[in-house]
Length: 420
Image (cartoon, rainbow, N blue to C red; front, top):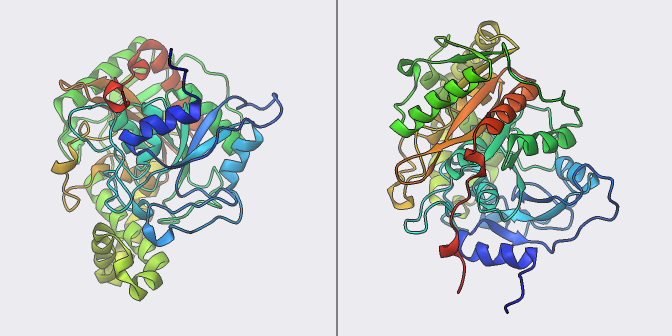
């Protein structure tokens, strides 16, 4: 009989087909058994520093970039007893939403063994590693949906945290005023445990959402049309929350989501250009073609457009706080579709983050939850959005939803990914 594979061997085995990891570390469990995460294996996106390890941020330019110290968020996991399994693949410099990395390899969505499909980005490898059950949890970063988009396309749970709530030192930045750090896992309960450790913030015990207020948008407020499977999942989720005792009502947003998406794109590009301008002007060829195009666009954006977008952001953030109560939650799609085939994606087209980018723009937090499948057997998702600091309410709602449904328990058939 063939001996069972070790955890490290299993990860390496699946990684040959899925390309989720760029580096796998030996599985080493910290000494002691009293940590909140003792026994957990966690992967980290390739923009998180681990002292002595390479963190290449998805670009050949940093292939030898070795960290001098460990990111605080990661160190807190280690201090709680977690074993860090390795660095996961990501979009180059975290600047892209589909999960494509032409230079270092694009992680493959594990839900289709026949057609190569994108995993979403930029935390693509983290989502694939969790979805394929290579690890129970992973860390990602979210500037415009980079945790929630891959979580949605890969059928896992992902939390975009309030800006600054989890320390970001030791995490390579894309756009400093938009970046946030958060967990990706199979369940909301697991995300809650990771969140508590990294934010050093105890959450109240989970309670039934009886009487809680949940708002929904009419589809006329959507920035782009959604696929029928996504809308069906949203309607079914609303029914589940209603059954759990929540009060659902329709509300019109105080702004056009498409305008917020546009302004956020302008400012993210501006901040990324400010960080990388020196490198780009020294050797633009060191960057991939898609990054070159985005930086060229940012370079050509005039100061008046940037100033107008900044002013509009201040106004939109204020309107969001005034319009949306602190104890209210918004139910909406995470992304408009299931995972498309890799060869059908046009990076120059409409961004994947039409439903996610605006949350970073106005300073909210959000949780993506698996909520169904389309006719091809690909995952679709819903998103819960709250004011800054509303993580406890989002996670409690997510937990209640997952105790009432089983979408998060579904596992992709990975026989095609294993060697004979």
